[in-house]
Image 1: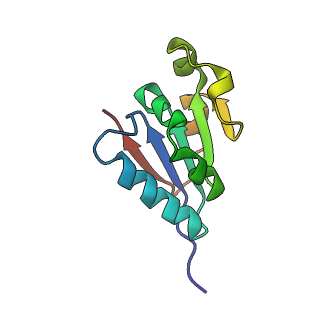
Image 2: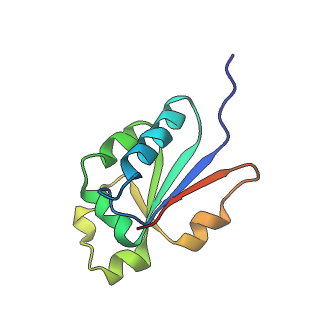
Length: 109
């Protein structure tokens, strides 16, 4: 029986068009498909990824998706445009829930 990968948390503050974001999301999706626990937190410029077609497959792969409510309000993000699978949260809550051994990946512009 293959080992389950350690938990992975991705802090996404870069837009989906930034170099490296696509491969980073694909690698995270692969971890989820392998049975790993994966959560993605969208904030700042990364909020643009919520309207990107690549977000739906992330939730379908079993990844937990959340966004920074403060950042979303500051950018005037329309709540009606946020997929129902995305939880409104905070960076504090996202980081507070890190378990020992969790891998934390980040993408900043």
